[in-house]
Length: 312
Ligand code: NAP
Ligand code: GLV
Image (cartoon, rainbow, N blue to C red; front, side):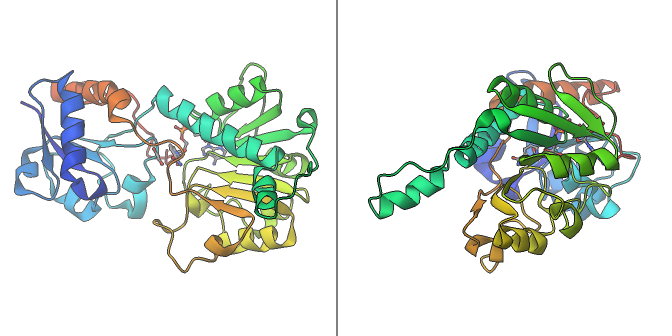
């Protein structure tokens, strides 16, 4: 019987039960145990989201860690975990579509000025606001991996010009793809809407800082659903105040939950979402997690391993 250590949102019992129920469809004898309980010490795999890593390190039988999300920065942070332990992440088309819906909503709210009309309603103002011609809008997507490439294709389908940026060169039908620092700057300068879907690594931390935000066109829109630490929040607020960034839609923050005293809350052209753009869905993700657990039990290499060296 596979015993799997579990930690997500403080190992809330209902959540652990939900995962166990979903995993049982593929592994009927599986048992999830709270990472913080002594029983977890026999586990050879662990399912983790924002777990206390010192506790994970204490489990000497672990042969594999599985991230309960597509990102793994929560496991790699502070370099606590033994570099030899493989790390598996979720790659779920449901999550990619869910992110795509959130991004499309954010883009359409910007170009149709949804919040301007909300404000007009308060004063009973029945007037057309200036509409942006979508055929002239160029959208840059930073990070065109499992999620970003789905978002890019869906936005393209809606009639936008879409260009992508990644670490290595990508060839995606209908999308102009770039890589390299000079092309990052080219996209910053030439695009109207910027979407960050990058993983957090030593190369992407603070990538949207004073110098890169200052390259954006006046009146740009900035959307971040990658990770908060990719943005210098003080610099973002400065450019939202100046109007260089006309609208910022954020789902992720340097510190989560976003502290009550964060200045981001008060900046009226910044929209705050509480890290929900694409949530992990046990119903759709259980099959691949069960497969990974089975592989570990049999001593095989599980799918969707991350590369420690590149950080994602
Ligand atoms: P992925 O498949 O690993 O794709 C990552 C993309 O970023 C790839 O295109 C990669 O380039 C590119 N990249 C990585 N480092 C780079 C660098 N230094 N310079 C340029 N491009 C770089 O990841 P994913 O599954 O799409 O997920 C991306 C991130 O989204 C996650 O890590 C997580 O932070 C975030 N996320 C957020 C939510 C949410 O609800 N807000 C939900 C899920 C995920 P290559 O193609 O060359 O490798
Ligand atoms: C969510 O942020 C994830 O990485 O899946």
